[in-house]
Image (cartoon, rainbow, N blue to C red):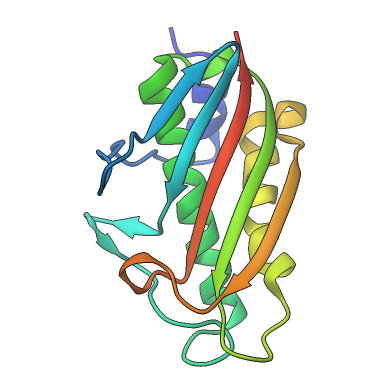
Amino acid sequence: MAGEIEARLKALDLVLPEARAALGSYVPFLHLDGQLYIAGQLPLADGKIAVAGKLGAELDLGQGQAAARLCALHILAQARAALRDLDRIVQLLRLNGFVNAAPGFADHPKVLNAASDLMVEILGNKGIHTRIAVGCASLPLGAAVEIDAIFAVN
């Protein structure tokens, strides 16, 4: 029987991507002392960067928000790989979001709101979290957004 969070994903017509292996010398998640740390997730689709470029230059806000949503789905895919059951999530504690931004772009929070809103939509009150939204000069593979997460889990 599917759990509450899996049922919510289905009701929202969302499918989590396959949890991918790390692209370097790190692990995709680390579960320690009731916390689950998820490494930075990129906006991937079919194993490739789906949204690449700089916000405020070649990408607009809507494209950045789509990238942030993809990152959020990848975070949950890693959480499911780590926990086997998303209902073991007690609370999403933190999202750290990085936006590949052109000089003068200042809507980082609006980009990350797409991931934050999706987490609340999927996890309910367990998805309410603290957050960082910062701009940077570049991201791995030219990605528009990268987001990592920390969950409290049982």
